[in-house]
Image (cartoon, rainbow, N blue to C red; front, side):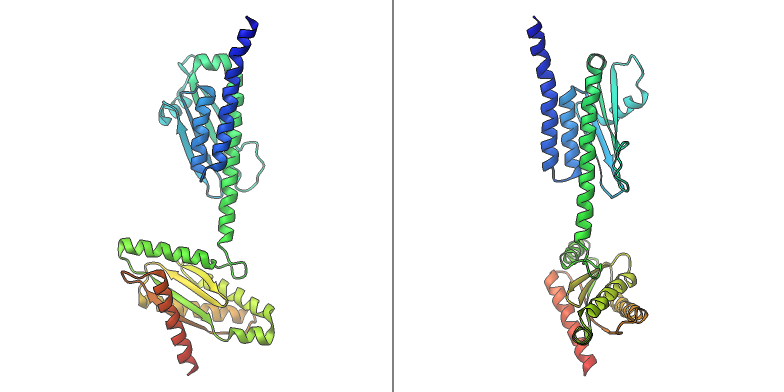
Amino acid sequence: MGSDRHLRVVPEEHGAFEALRHALRAAITAPDLASALDAIASCLVDAVGAHTAVVVAADDGGAHAEAAAGPMPAAEALHLAVHSEEGSEEDVVIRYIGLSASFGFGAPQGAVLVVLPTATAERDGARIAEIVQAFAELAELCVIQAQRLHQAERHSDDDALTSCLTRRAIERSLAAELARSSRTRAPFSIAFLDIDDFKRVNDEQGHIRGDAVLSAVGAALKDASRATDFVGRYGGDEFLVVMPATAAGSAIAACDRLAGGVAGALRQADLPVLRLSYGIATWAPGDAATKLIERADRAMFDAKRSRRA
């Protein structure tokens, strides 16, 4: 008899453990935070036999997601969490995310909530609380990982020397503007900029001095551009600026402002005051990214040649 009772208890514990293992595997392979929390909520329902499980998590780094699983709608579960009273047909277990964490800026916050029948809570309340806590800690780890990935992606988009976007990132911004204009038919422009006589600085004053020029130019371009513009280092001493919702005339005025900002920054930093040559291209239906860049590049070289003439 005692042996039979033992055999009836072990599968229950084993099922909760397997659900947690499955949640861990699913969270590790999830493509994003929302998918990871979906898996956690679903597995938590299985682990404790809940009517519903709700997971809400966020951090200060931009990662935010929520998920719900189980037959009871999430809104009803949250209502019960606020209004449930002792003796009601359902009991609510809540475990908060991040209260005991010491991750500094961007520490995760949120909650894991489960709604389950009173009979289950009365019979296994302590065990269920431990299981919910384990799932809450898994959700916390998922948020931390999402934040770190977000930070890594953001930093990987920045050119180390100029702090402008990398070529890959600026090309991605250009592709997004192309897609938007293809849908809305709204124009946008790009500018291709090159630092005149930059090679002479490297040859005569050394690459350290040349790097200082590039750094100052990149910072000045970012400072002088609009908040809606994208500024990227295309390669060497060449920069590409994507200007959403900007027609050709406004793009020319914007480039004049950029060139003036660069000259002022170089002068203030006691660096060689080099001029920028630029060319613009404005999107027209049917334009591809390569076509726009080629037009802007040709216009830039035409401007450089006319200046030397």
